[in-house]
Image 1 (tube, rainbow, N blue to C red):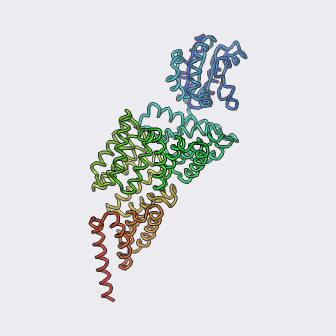
Image 2: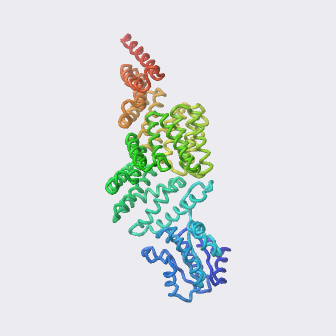
Image 3: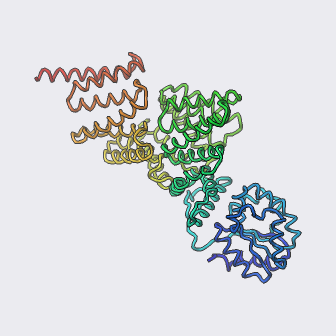
Length: 600
């Protein structure tokens, strides 16, 4: 039932149809079904002869869409006495031939439509109405009335942050996603999925995924899994490349890296087959591969693919440009892993200059770069500088990107991390609890960002010596990261090692075996991922030494302390503080070893 069928808007629209010989009106409704229901009600209530032209009827013969005046006249000629023409579901034509193309055709037909001496009533979604008002200004000057209807039974299927006002393109994208989703669900009973619609909604979702909650992501995952194999069937190789690229990016956004790798490899095979070695297409492929490798923890390959892309862009004089900012950021992230902080800082600052020089302060990229700059300062130990960068990122987000859930969570997480390191545990905990609530509401409990929050919240509870919540949140982080990454990711290894550390700090005999198991899991990942002299591997050796020390096995403790010391000397030099601290631990273990010998 149409909630306003007997209301003021419906009566006004009906009155326009009765009293106006020629003109144009618009009504809006969220779905194709609703628009048709309204069209039927309007026709029923009209005393003039009216016809309905429902664009949904052309779903299986899109080549016959009445997109010009000749085809419309052919329809009118079948019922020449009709005085009112109700055309509903115009947004579907936008889908089939392109929004801009179809709107341009409507705009061009304005005077020809008026010459037909009919009353035209156009039904469309709110999204398409906004587009029409923007891009068909000539046509819109003739619109006499524009109203919107809802259906009483309609329930909200897309939830996003109602407390924030989304404007401009974001609102359009969210509305378009809801519109496409409704169309697909309405036609879910079809034997074959509407592949064109499926491809279209994947593109739209990638553009507004940060503004939708986890239920939308879960729905997209189910849809993508069901159509990924058939989307490429019957397409030419160049079209297949676009599909593989799309699928890689969808699964990257979803955090399903095994499938990212699968479709990225299929794309790489075709791109290398069809394009010249130094083409932009090859560069874009290397950039995407770098991103994928970075996400999956293959840092060496991430850097290699990044530089391959940059060498190509350099040939086009685009080595330092808006097009290469993301690639430089990938390299900077690898430098952080390698503890080359100054090199990472230099890249972030260079990228900020490139963005500002192009007049793009409102770009989402600068928010991300400031955040990454803060991370680099944090890793270097310059916490006050890190806090300034994170707060600048937060300021830009609130100014230009209100409602971007992932950006808000990321900044809260990072600012809380700085407070944690400064010793302000209460502020750190409150910020992380706020981030957790936002994340679980809009992205779900199994999202990648949720794992970061669980991990950091566990670390705060551990420093407060609240062992139960610390263990709880480390295990939640591990569960999510194992689900997303498998058992080969360095972030997962961090969660393993930190959980082992809180077991060790409690010095409870029943926990030591669990600590040992998690330490070995972390070490296995780090040895597979990092070079043999990486500080995280030394950290694992150190932790194993502490475990054996607590158990009273000082011989084994010395073995692991010596292995750690060798890495520390190579990395930081003989006079570094960490080397001196480790020497002290070695002396302690030797002293305990001698005591045991004397007792024996």
